[in-house]
Amino acid sequence: MMASAIPVGLPQLSRDPLTSTPEAGPALATEAPPVDPLASDRAARSRLRLQSSGWGALAAASAGLIAAALALSDAAASPLEAGLRAAGCGFFYGLLAFHLQRVDPDDGHLQAGLVGALCGIRSLSAQGPQAPLAPSLMMECARIWLPLWMPLIGSALMVYGFQRLLAARHRSTLAVPRP
Image 1 (spheres, rainbow, N blue to C red):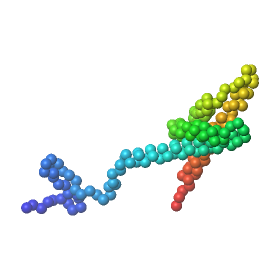
Image 2 (cartoon, rainbow, N blue to C red):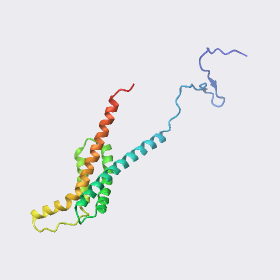
Image 3 (cartoon, one colour):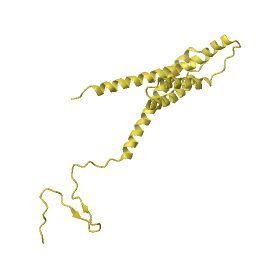
Image 4 (cartoon, one colour):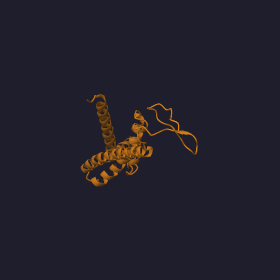
């Protein structure tokens, strides 16, 4: 039997009898365990769904509370019905605003257009104005639609302010070196 002439400290190569190709010796202990890309993708998607639902819930709660408070001052309107209708539009706004923020965070025109579109959708459920003349028609429209739009505008301002507050807070925690 011949002694092998492999220097000490180098990994030994062995031959696979089926393929006759060299294989590396034992694995080094410094290798990282394999990362499951699907698990990290699922976690990221779950986090995005949770954030989207949070934006929707914040917008729905603020729009519902503003609408209910405005309906308390109007004897003809039911605060519960007004709050629920506004909360539904607010939730829809929150979901769309979150995804719009992810796509293009610096486009204020799209954000304002989204608020305007949802105010228009909310106006479709209102009764039409009954005034025959143009100046009184415009005032009648403002009287009918403005209370419907105020909760959505307030909700949009609240979501926007909350988003800016969190972004500033996140930037300040990143800028401070930790020991």
